[in-house]
Structure formats: structure tokens, C-alpha cells
Length: 351
Length: 250
Image: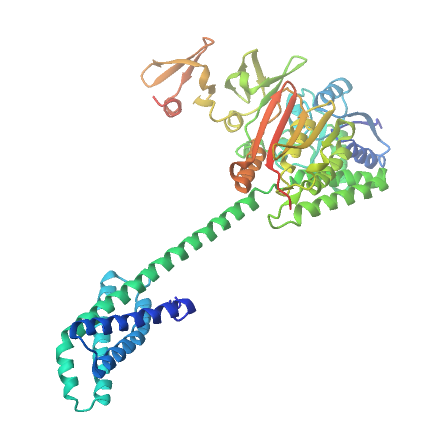
């Protein structure tokens, strides 16, 4: 820990002012008590306060040294008492030495010394207590704020890690099936194969290259997920169609990257995978009461599928919204006849 | 030599095209049908009786695995899929090969050669090491439907309609809302893959939907009997009783 006074200019000024007031206070009380000020008394007060002010500064070092989390309370108390005895002794001896040098064989000083001895010890102990109190107050306030800062750092780290984990992982089967289509297209339609490789690369670049949780605009999210849907269209042909109705005003709103990917993946998995007829995925985006409202819906075959979905995709999207926006964002799903709809509300914030 | 009659079943057109293209090399292989979903695939196999089938797994209506499970006369089957987790089940079903998409041409040709050898020798491969494999369950979320054959009809039973599953030698009898159906499958499979919260193994031979139990009565010294809402009475073993106790908290 840095020295609380020496490391800060403002505190240095306050420190020296406090001692100045202490000296003035002593002079005043002496004057009020004895009705006059003598050279001896003025010199003694100024010298003793000056010595004490420097001594008190150095007291910080033993205190901060013997005050780690593992220090036992007994050690701290012993440290304070020992520090007090040593510094008081040094203070009194040093003051006396200097005074004797200034006033050699002074009868007046001898009398003054004897008259003020007990008062000197009393005031020394009192000032010592004040200094100790100040230092310990400083130490506890600093550790408290440090602890708070550490907790806040830790919390944001945990949040960031969780967000990274929740970021949708591209389903490997999507990749393998797409590559299989490419493999086939190289024989039947090389032009289309090249086109698909380019789309696949562009989409993977978007999905893989973003290591951090930097938000993106709705424009770039939609552009890239349309690539994803285009690739799926090559695989499924007429069985998959899409329809978009996007209010241009929404396009620059920011949102978490790949937030919509699991929603489209679900639409493919529960819609196209399970249905022999055509499946249409509709996307709608508009601004409603200061929020970006995104609606993604698909029709699906109502017959039971081979295995139930686990709901992880939707849960992850909901958790990401919660971590990014608290309760300012929401997700809702609904099933009506053969239509499944997901609605997202995200605060309309711009990059 | 007779031509080898082949059906390609895959819901993705490019995937079918690739197989067709590779098969052009064999003048003794003839593609007689292409299907894009499980039901139409099943129909083609039943009516056309092909020698060889290329079969995807993840498809609408019926998965490739479900299809093979209900086939009475099985052609030689080569699975082609991007999913690796069904391989064990596929070999249990005596598949010739299991090709992971995208597959190299070499691998495809090897699989075809194996199939041709099997067809020409007239023996349908070796008996799979089923007993060894059955200890390794097909993993994933709980199943949502069971596909069975009844005479010439194929029934899709939603899991919600299954009352209990009864072991019968190498088969299981599935008792459901619409009757009962036999299927070649192990009890262990159903114990592992039906929703665990809904079904309890009350006996070595019985797996019961908890909701369908009306009451449990003592029967003999150590055992009990479960009476279902349908009136069926099923034996409950000692360990089954213990499991029921845990499940129902009594």
C-alpha cells in the first residue's frame, strides 16, 4: 500500500495544516493558561510539533507492514503499543536535546520542562492515538474499496466468460452436410459449388472470427444469417423459402453477435428437417416503443419428431439477453396451429 | 448377371446427385428410385424390393434407423449421414457400411464393393456383435416417437401414448393407447431413451408409465402387483418396488 499522505499532494497540504493548527492551538492554550508567551515556550512548541509531524509520517510503515490479512489482532495491538512507546521516547528525547542545544544552562527551560512534563506525555499519547486512528481508517477504507473493485472485476469476468460460452456454436452437422453438397455440386454444377464455398466461407468468417462480445448492427447480423439460410436453401431446394420484412430504420441498431443464429437453426431443425412439404421462414424487424422487435416464424409438421429438442438454443438466447440487457430485453415464443413464432424485444441502442 | 437394383433415400437433392454420379461407374448397378423422406423410402423398398439402398438418417417423417427397424425384408443398406452417433445402431441393424458425409470417393467405392460381394454371395453378412454393442446406449435427448410395423401398416406411436413396455425374448411388446405392437429392440434401449421422469422399470420385464399406475397391491410374500388404469396387472419386483417408492415418494 502506498503512503496515504506522501503519495497525494492534497493530503500533504491537509497534513501540514493540521499540524500547524495543533501548534497554534498549543500556543493559544499556553497563552490563555499563563497569560504570556515566552521564547522558551514558543520554541518548545514549534520544535516538538515539527518533530512529531515528521515522526508520525514514518509511523505509517510499521502499521502497513504489520497489517496483512494474516496478521493476528494480538500482533496489531502489540505493534501499536510498542510503536507508541518508542515514538514517544524518541519524540521527547529529541525535543529535549534540541532545546538544550538552543538554551544551554537555561534555568527558565528547566522550570518549563518540569512544569509541562506530564502535559507533554498526555498530549503525546493523545496525538499518537489520533494518528493511529487516521491510519487505520485509511487502511480499512482502502481495503474495502479494493475489495469492491476486485469483486466487480471478477463479476464482469464471469459474465464475459458466460456470454462467450453461450455464444451459439455452429452445429457441426450443418458444416458437414454443406460440404457434402459442395462435394456433389463440384460434379454437377461447379459454378454453384464455387458460389456455395464463398457463402460458406463468408458465414464462417462472421461466426468464427469474433472472439469478443462486441455488438454488431442488425444489418450485419441479418446479412450474415441470410448467407446461412442461402446455404441451407442449396441443400433443401424448394423445401425452404424465406421472406423478410425489415424496417430500414432498424438496421443500425446494435445487438449481440449471432443472437439470431440459434433461432434460424431451430426453424431449420424443427421445420425443414421434419417436414416433406415447403417450410417458409419469415423474419420481421421493426421499432416498437423504443425497442427493436424481431419476429422469426416458421411452419412445421405437427407429427411427433424422432427425438424432442432440448430447448438449449432458446434458453441460451434468453440468458444472453438477460446478461446483456438485464430486464430491458425479452424473448417470447408461441405455437399456433402449425406456426412457430419467436419474438425478441431488444432496447433500440445504436453503435 | 442381373443388375443390382438400387434405391437412394436422402432428403437433400445434392446428396442424392453425388451418389448417383458415383454409381455411374458401375454398369451393373441400376438406380430404380430416389426418395426424399422416410415414408416414401419405406414404400419404395416394400414395393420395389431393391437389392441395395443408400440411406440418410435425419429425414422428415421417419429417420433412416426407424425405417430399417420396421423392414421385414431387408435389402443391403449403406447409411450416408453427417451424424456419427448412430453408427453402432446401424451395424446392429446389419448395415453394410456407414459413410460419414462428406465421404471420399475411395470410401464410397469400398462400401459398394462390400455390398456387391454380399449380394452376390447371397448371404447377408455376419451376425452383428449385438450382445456386445447393446451395452452402449444410443445417446441423446429422450425419444419422442416409436415406429412399429403392424401387418403391412407402419404405425408411428407418440411416446405420450405408450402405457408400458414388456420384454419378450429378443423383442419388446409396446402397449399403447391404440393397442400393442412388437418391436425388435432391447428393454435397456427403452429404459435409456424413454423420458426418465415418466417411466419406471418395475420388473425385469416391465417398464411402466408412472401416470398409468392406478394402485399397487401386495402379492405374495415379497412382491407386489401394479394395477393400471386400463385394468392390466403387472408384477412388481422387489427392486422395482424400491424404485417406485423413490419415484412416488411413499
